[in-house]
Length: 326
Image (tube, rainbow, N blue to C red):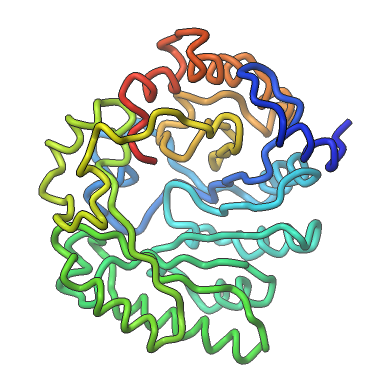
């Protein structure tokens, strides 16, 4: 039986590498792994990642999954791979979460090219807490170098629509954050974008880019940096790869969170694109506890803790390659 207070106590004191007596409070649920853009360092539309099955989560499956995590989840990232607003059921998903457990905080990260008026109504009326808009440029010329197929004008128009709807409905949420990934080609527009965000009355968040997201955990970070060096910013404030020796030494994700693919497959984190190939279980077929304390999850924790080695577990590969920076 799950007891929320006991979950909090166990989570604060238990550090062992095997089975856990608590469940994670932060979970990612992918609405789909299909995207409308073709960003060069993202695998969703990459030719060499086409073996990955594509699809969108339907509302019935979403309800099954949410009902299983409802007792303990506090924060849901309603995205992973793909563009979340390509899923026509996303508004109903948001509504279901907030109706069943109003205290759950919902985060959505979107390129904001595919959202429509129905989506805008849903995210404002039903209470999405944080909406991050991935927009890596202040002008179309710069923006389109990475967000291929996107329109910065359309993004800004959609942001204005959300602001208007918030005013119309008298809502404080969602909090809107302009998420600006800093690359070599767009370093010069960071401050221009920051100023534009301030003028619009939204928050601004600039952070370093990642190397090829579909390949990074399968190769040493030095190899990733060499291949993708044309994208890496020169400004040390945003370059995560300046000092490779100071990279991550440990990964806490198998103890703290989990990621659920559009078809119910569960993986340790959002860096894993081929969820079916590296899954630890499936929440449409199993209980959460069966997956969370299943053989693969337990083995992953032991691998990270240095107690076991198994090249068939994705966490082994990621550890061998230095955990990258995700």
